[in-house]
Length: 356
Image (cartoon, rainbow, N blue to C red; front, side, top):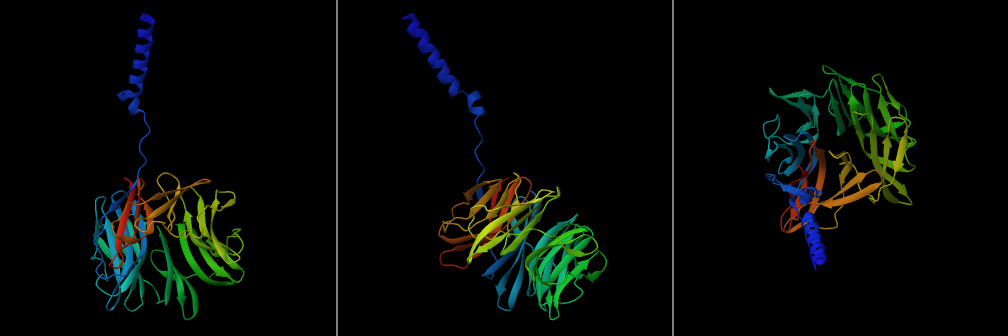
């Protein structure tokens, strides 16, 4: 009998240890989930989200435009770490036009702006307020924009063809590109002497690189019959290209990563996902929005090495289409900005956050 009591006592002690506070404290923390962030609605949907950039947890900006009776109207929203609000203090806020890419350049925030007359400019916001840097000429298409301390580029076309406009902080110049380049689809930069652009050429899609002196073919071994959606440049020297490769008319997403010595190509299971909104998250993985199989929820892909996982945004009552359009890392969380269409109304703005 005494032996039986000893056995039962040992069992009770073991069970208590399994559910003790000390044991519970070592349990793995719950994974962060996406939450909805209220956004003041635009007044004239339908609308388009152009870009999203974040400096840190307490500052992010989203750009775009809405369709008013007299044409496009620019949209600018600011995140202050607690809430989204619409900003109407920038030059041209009440006039027809649109806002494109937004970037942080040193202590300033820069935005590509197109006004009623089709004239382009760079809006700059600093602690002292807003200022504008007009472009030296009007383009009939403004394809992309990139800015870093000491330099900015605007690419597009006019009636004479392709234009690469370069700003060195005081003046604009037009930069030539290699022969055989028909069209520049996008541009990004790491520094004033290190910029990259992806182009349509007489031999297919190619990557060009500005080395501080000239634009040259970077000789990136892209997959055959492919295009480029985006290119991420990181301070470490790592670069990532996202695009689509076409085989017998069917597109599949590919990624190419430069590790400082060689390019590596992979084909994550993303179908024909458009990768323009891809960012490097605070967890070190790549994140991008993907087409959701649930009308009332957004969907995101996380790519970490060879592993691809998915997560859903919060459920939205009566939603029939939830579309994240842009992502940004705040160093402690991911911010998403896009549109949501509620049954019976036109699509309006939405935002979501992972972590934070």
